[in-house]
Amino acid sequence: MQKDWNGLATLTSKAKLHLYIIGMWLLLSPTDGTQAIGQDVSSEMILSAKITKSDTIEIRLDNESITPKPAAFTITPELAIHSLHKKAGTIRLHTATIDLTKSYSIKYKKSQKELQPDGVLDEFSSVKELGCTWNEDHTIFRVFAPRATRVTLVLFDSLECDSGIEHAMERDIEGVWECLLPGQYLGKYYCYKVAGPQSPTELFDAGKLICDPYSKAVATKSEYLHHGKRHHRNSAR
Image (cartoon, rainbow, N blue to C red; front, top):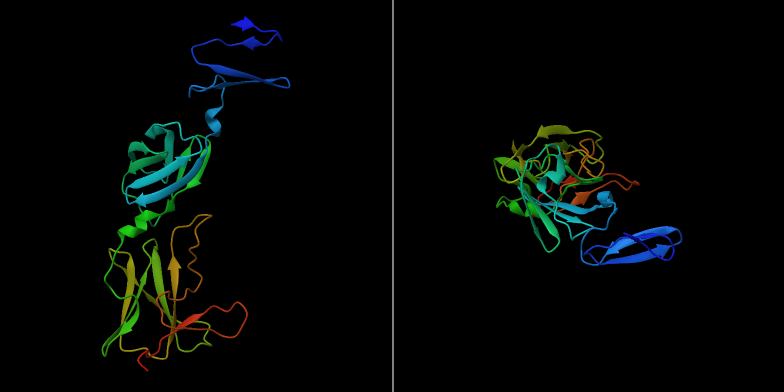
């Protein structure tokens, strides 16, 4: 270590350092990709965190030059991390099977972010006809909601009804919820109630009536902010 003309200590090492004097502050920045002495790395932030497969999480940090170890990440609720791979700035964490009915967050140093389901939803596939279908014997209601924890069918006698009859729906392995009822319900109205993982960024609310996204028609009162109901009619007419 030696003194330069302004009395500030100058570090000499194999790493090339640029010396910048800004007011009374001394900033050392390496030009060879190494970490500067005294640099605060605790500010490294998670830019994005996505669930791309049922056992894979992809993360991007604001500092793409580093490759953390798996132990540097913490997932809540607890989820085992088996390995870590990095490619083109994307960090891939291979984990235990992820339960999509839960809301997860991941922490790295002082940065924390909620995991967003992304490509993982493409793993689900069903040949079942969604929406409302019927024959002479029964009527089937189906809706795709792989992250839901509970789905309830609500049947209304008329558009003016404020309450209806609720029927619990069952989930199959591909994330399709269905309810089979005997007979036909032409002229009735229906909605769904959908419960799911809870967090500040989730929109699941089991107290709200949700219109069927696969319906062929939607009916609503001419009132401001009135929730729509699906009108179950014979579409052949």
